[in-house]
Image 1 (cartoon, helix red, strand yellow):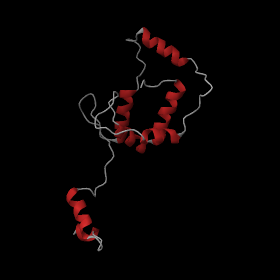
Image 2 (cartoon, one colour; image 1 turned 180 degrees about the vertical axis):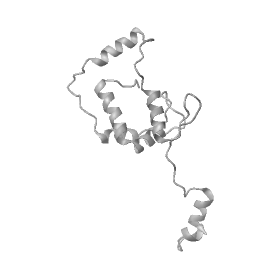
Image 3 (cartoon, one colour; image 1 turned 120 degrees about the vertical axis):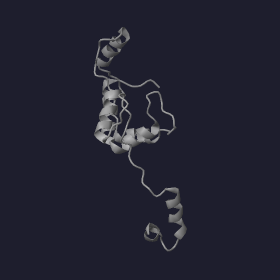
Image 4 (cartoon, one colour; image 1 turned 135 degrees about the horizontal axis):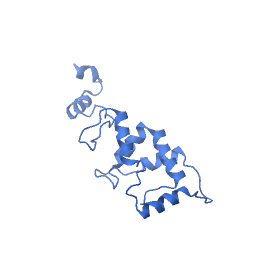
Length: 142
């Protein structure tokens, strides 16, 4: 019945191919992650919170080394250079869309595909993260 409803009279074999290869289904957004307690997140909000908890430190300084103290001190100093300016949303979008999508993750454990999906789901949140990093002068080494 599905075949009869979806098949145009001009090309009856197109939908047959899609149904048999399951290419007519929309990709679902990524909403689950494996948490440190070996359970999975069940909602998008829980997934975002798990990502925030994993990637953003809470400022526990009990095991901080001198190296960390120097970095913390440097981030508090205002950076004043002639070419400082805010990111614009288009720059962030172009940078993320230009990422390669290898099957293996980078050193942060996130693949290019995950960055792209996260940006597509939460573009203003992603922009805010980049802007805060720019204001704090905190960038990953490349």
